[in-house]
Amino acid sequence: MMPTAVCLRRCAAPRPGLGLPSKLGTVRFLGTFLADPTAVPPAVLRYVAQQLDLPATTALESYRAGSTRFVHIRTIQQRYGYRDFHAQPQHFQLVCWLYTRAWLSSERPSVLFDLATARLVTQKLLLPGVTTLVRLIAQVRDRAATRLWQTLHGRLTPAQRAILDTLLIVPEDRHSSPLDRLRNAPTRISAPALVGALHRLDEIRALGVGAIDCRYVPTGRMQLLARFAAAARAQAISRMPPERRSATLLAFVQTLEATAQDDALSLLDQLVTLSLARAARKGQRARLRTLKDLDAAAADLALVVAMLLDETAYPDAALRAAVFARVGRDRLAMATATVRQLTRPTGDTTYYELLVNRYGLVRQFLPSLLRTITFSGLAAAQPVLDALHRIRRDEAPNRRVIIARSIVQQPPGCCFAWVARSSAAERAADAGNEQLYSIAGILAASRRF
Image (cartoon, rainbow, N blue to C red):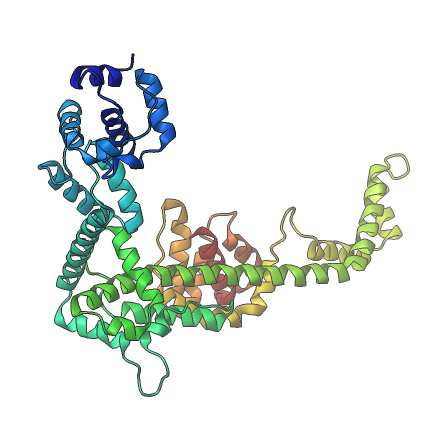
């Protein structure tokens, strides 16, 4: 016989009926006692009666009318350790547990309700009414939200609060508030859009609240406030209490600063990828147009190689004269130059040299990019960081000479290796190819960072 049945035999009258078993099954399954014992399904009562060898009756009206059910409730609580919802210290522990979850996470009230219900059942605390638990969860969440607003509000100075409030004011010469303007991310892939994204990042940093220490505030709570500010109307935020308004704007600005920088770098990567794709298409079209010249030059060189390999027909002493007589010195030199000019290294499909024609595009955003974004990396990225630092030094009077000399210091296998091959003549004249070097720096930065 099951332990439950043993308990029933020990603690009940000689013929206990189905009242006590129904109460015990209800509290185990539902976590609370039913106010109306007759609400137990008849199929359940028949099954319990079969297990306990009791009469298969499902009528509990007399049990509901009497006071025996209250005695059974106390008996089950004493025997199995069930406690009322407000029993201490379990109730206080439940409140602390709910407050901790409400403070550390942004769980919805329905999630907290389900978690609290499971905890009460596990700890054998009788479930209260639904509204009682809902009100308790609402009070705990309100207390956690008030603490969050007060914490963030207290970290701001009066001047910083005034600056954040200006985000909600619509200027006279505009139709939208600064808040509405700043939360609109760039949507186009172009150099002006990248410049606008960088100016957006500068404007966010100029608010002066990015350095406020909010490490002790849970990240999930900060993100929840930021998401609310990103979706709510400026008028709705302006009508909030001062503490909530300042906390919401602070969380929004701190989260938006990182998001705006990511938007700018993502736009830079997309712009570089688009430029490389266009250069590759242009290079492939140009390569198709030169196939005829390449075929003719390759045919001449193949003829010379065939003569070189034919040791019986052309001895070594007469080989040079035979080659020049068959092909011609000038024709052979022209074929060699054509092959060198039109052939590309194996696997090289980047067409970096065609990006020089797009230096005007790079020049539109390069100063703002280097002034706004601070790049950093590990030791492997140090050559690229040095190159970006040299490009950033606009005030250097001998900048072109510095760039020219620094090109040859870059390791092979990176974008600057192409610069070293492409600007040998200019480096020899100490002029430096500033355009090539700047483009290579942007390419390396977009790929490494």
